[in-house]
Image 1 (spheres, rainbow, N blue to C red):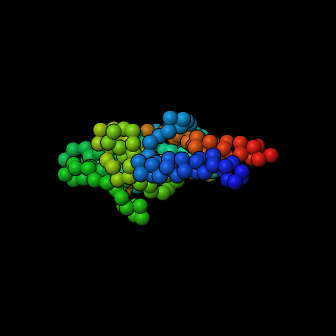
Image 2: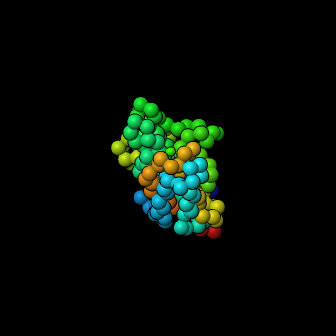
Image 3: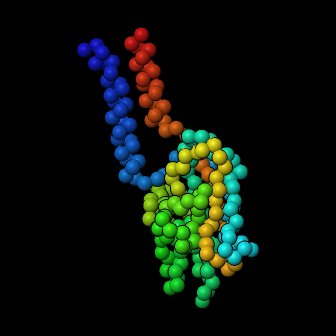
Amino acid sequence: MRVYSKSIPVIILLVVLCVVYSGRALAGFILPDDAILVDTIQVSSYSSSANEGVPVFSNVTLEQGKEYAIKSEGTFVVWVYDGDHYCDAEWYQCETFSWVEYNTPESLTDADLLINGDRYNWWGTTDGIEFTEHVFSESTHEYFVPSFTGQEQKVEFLIYDSWYLDNSGSLTVEIFQIPEPATILMFGLGVTLLRKRNH
Ligand SMILES: [Ca+2]
């Protein structure tokens, strides 16, 4: 019974963790207040080579195993046909100038912002705070790849397109480091206190 009573704080912490994380999963992505901006990069949409874009590397090396969130903001002209057609990190103005999402990670036939050569679903927002997959950021053109794990390398960004000579403008990419969640630190603290009490 004595051992049971000492386990209660840990059980309470586990319940809190479950509630917090299930809430996060349902709520989409919100950049934590303690996220640290570690880099800002401009990715140009234009290339003097018609079929080959210009890759840009981050200034910083992303630390092995650390969690990051990557943000893109802005639009660029991707196509000139009866006027300028714009594109952002995820959505594109089609022939009728209405915006459609590029959502075919397996194919590289449309313009997109690639990370290390790979397609990502960039999550958009309607309120500028919460970001969700397949949402168009109509007013801000801000998007997040909410979870990106560092691999002790710089990160390569490239605006992919099939024809670069009619492009103009660039996207602004920001890289945020996400500190370990406070709840995990609290859990660690709870275990430490329990061990001390048991000794
Ligand atoms: Ca183009």
